[in-house]
Image (tube, rainbow, N blue to C red; front, side, top):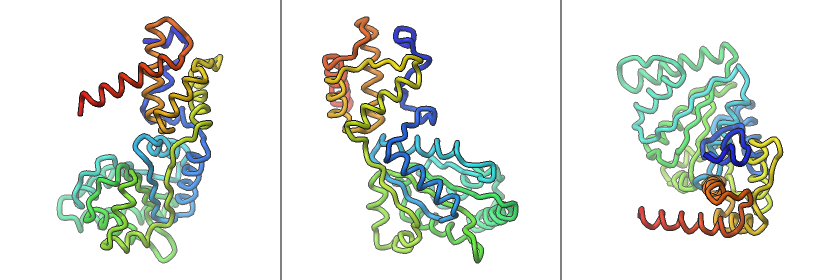
Length: 273
């Protein structure tokens, strides 16, 4: 709606996890590098946590674009599953047709697939998003998947992505063996004030040949204070602010516009609660 007004090739603040807009902050770059390292070195288990909207999924999508042809991945986003449903979905994600029968037969089928991939020098990666929703029973099943290994190699690399509740869930005494299997743990923190400003500039430059600066210094201050450096909130506020600028026919997004957007967001939040 406002693309032509600002001269954008596309909307800069969509909330979809598009790797094109990956912002290489020190935090997001470190998270990405840790994941690449863990996969390449076949470390087995990795846990990445972060607040809602911190950028975990965008990091993951960027990771998938960087993996070579010798890596097969399965991305599980529906985590309200029982153990059998999980194994079935994993097989389907790897384009393996699940055989009729019980969970044990499915596990045997998955193991055969993994051995075939190892023989072909293919690294297999399972990524489970929103893993905080997994029950302790299903988490234990995920741990058991890490037992699929040879004397020298892990047959499958497992990455769990989740909100901070995931770490609390893993602290349960019954999941001690699970915690011992985690080779790498990383918490993705929010952006600081300078990173928030650079993030917005990065997004604008990604869609504009001129790399235009639309937001005033006061607008940046309010944006950071409200968003606390959470990329998804930044995107939502900036998108609404650009729409307001278009309606007001101004190409300067000032503090007044940001204040209006924040008040509207707060009103909608209270009204829907």
